[in-house]
Image 1 (tube, rainbow, N blue to C red):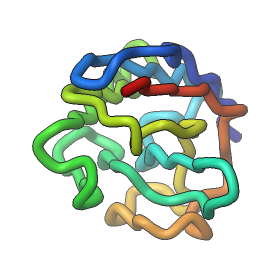
Image 2: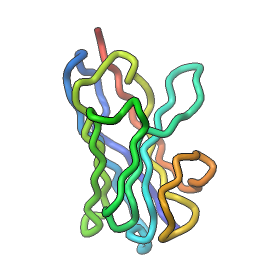
Image 3: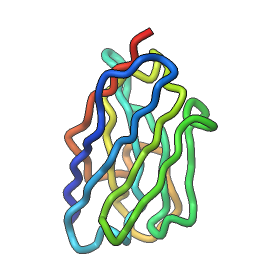
Length: 126
């Protein structure tokens, strides 16, 4: 089992940056792909970025390409999401999640993930 805790959210002006962290506990963290999702008010939760269990592969939503970078440090049981050139439309609650099946390919669908953090709020002002 994996427990996830996000941090690093906050209020930032458009064009600014934030780094989110996802700290995991549980001895099998390094076996799971980790994804970042976000949910804006009144909207569905959507995939933002994912990283493979060993850090060798990444996958980005079109909205994140070129601006966001996902990385992981398995020794620290932490996944990061560096977000640059933030826009007001990036405002949302950001969640990290661990995939249901270990050692598989990255899946951008929310139903592939069964461990979720509590979320961290990101607000980008114009």
